Structures are given as structure tokens and as C-alpha cells.
Image (tube, rainbow, N blue to C red):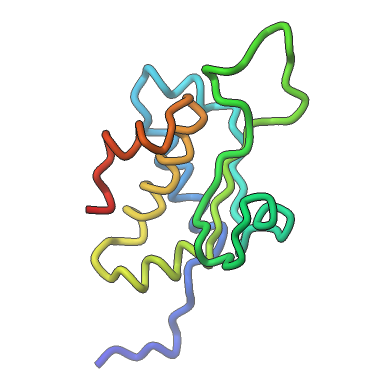
Length: 135
């Protein structure tokens, strides 16, 4: 039996490193459009974000894209805040432990790509048609 007393949960920095690795390996058609996105890793979504999404349980939200999708941007209406992908460490770890059938790297990659897809202007339905992750 393994000695778990010297083990710790992955830190926010470790989750961020996985996500940055995903961004660095994007196909050439997408990579330039992802380079200016801010990546933030927090333990939980802020209360105001949960309120806006009408979500009571912070463990239900693993990530979110906060910005204007590329398909909706207009040069005549500049954006006054940076596009940001938020990843929520505790929710990701909770889902990873609950699922038990994926690696942490795969789950972080999935959440990161899902949020990047929103940046590129894809809806949840578009993503679901391409990414059959939940099946």
C-alpha cells in the first residue's frame, strides 16, 4: 500500500502549467488567436460569478471563458478588458476524483479547450457535437 502522507493535491501553478501546455500545442490556425488570452487559476469561482451564472455550488464550475468571442468582436467597439479563461482548481480536482477514469492532465486539457472554444465563438452545442467527452 502506498504511503499517502507525503502527497499533496496539485497546486494552482501545476494546473496552470498543464493548461499553458495545452495552449502551446494548439493547431496553427488557432494558436495566434489564443496568445493574448489571460489564464487564471483560482481555487473556486468568485461569488459574483456564481451569482451571475445562478449557480450555488462552486464545485459545479470547472472553468469559464470571460470575454467577447472572436465571432462577435468589432474593431469599432474595442473591448475594455482582456479575454480571460478561468480554471477552478478545487472543482477540477473534485471532478477528477469523482470520475476516476481520466488523468488530471486530460481533464485540465478538456476544460481548457472547452473554454478556448468559447473564445473562438463556438456554442456549447457546437462543442458537444465535436467533443463527445461526457459520453
